[in-house]
Length: 97
Length: 477
Image (cartoon, rainbow over all chains, first blue to last red; front, side, top):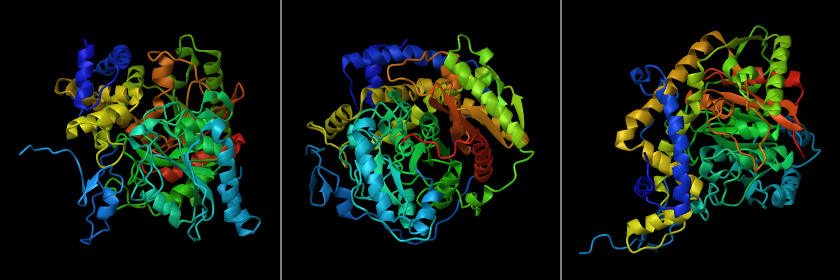
């Protein structure tokens, strides 16, 4: 059975937090989620089936010609960053020394 | 609101100029904004390229999860509330090259993850037919912009039914072609194996026109399909006599729904009337049966796959390179803070579900089982499509819901009738919603879904049914 602490762990793995009411609501929602998930498990012989990760099997591979495509300028890449220094995105120091 | 072809004739006959059409659309967009909230951004400057395409000079709107260089693109989320893209999505580039004129970027359920049109960071979108009701989502603003007659078409995305459901609730047409038919480059990914780009219009013919312009191989999207070399617009003249359609008994038989509401019964009766009309037209229509257990597992499988894929796709939203920057002393703290502040609770709940599904101990039981169910459904559908040209079903078990309505998420109606259109995304099938008249003065829709790669055939079938039903050009303005 999933607990609030479990939910906090799942959230922190994806790098965010919620207020306590949010976790309570999520916990309540999980009751339905678990019932929904059980519906998939009820299908006879489902474990025998190969999982499907793409809508169809046909693979339209094609080689691109070996030509440079246009790419973003440094200015464009940095345009939306809030902190920039020396043509790079600035973040706090990662290594102390 | 006129259709693309009617506007084309007006432009060609010099009855109106493109700039006049744009100004009218811009005026309506502003006038309706406070009332319905269709747009995140309304464009005030008339700007277009010259072209000889059918949409040259025609105004349109674009869902705000499609990248437009220099124009704010937020995906209706606070985590992108100030993001101005530095590149164009392929669809936007194609529309510009075809001379279409952008009127605005439309509101969606945050990050396209929702079906109500109520979760955007800029507020709820209201249904033009009844302001106390939802328009549905996630392409809420796109559906409203077409239903209100602001633009004759809108470009949007569909991962579960995000084009086709709001189209039904708004009384307009919504089409998503075969997976890969239209490039996804520049579409903010939700669930990559299910995401499609498509359109909302006032008639089937306009869907064919727009898809003809947008389709084709894109070197920037490795999943895009090579152009099939046909014009869907030309295929609308094809004869449909003897074409075979099927509907699924377990979805459409009102006797199977315990405690079905009067509204649901009316929707299903209306569907059966339309089946009779299809037979009058010359279609062969048959009922087929699919194990109810499979149908009930579609929605849980869709949620499992889409939430799992979404957690991965949205891991780039950190506030570091773009988006509002969080506070903190370390790079991790900054990202944590940005994501905590940037996502609404609904998105967080979906991400938590995705995180749970992807736990090592849950992958086999949840994620892989959902992918297995996907294969069972797609195999079943592919077998049926060997015998039939298309499937026809009601888009929903009711009219657009009231904002304060609630539905039992374990009910058959919710699990089967409200969520079956994800079949179209599981198999990447071409799938179109067209208006099917009214129940309690609100529009309802029918959905036609065909085999992979048979986009032109599906459009042709829908075109003939639309002609017979007589709701071409429906809208509420």
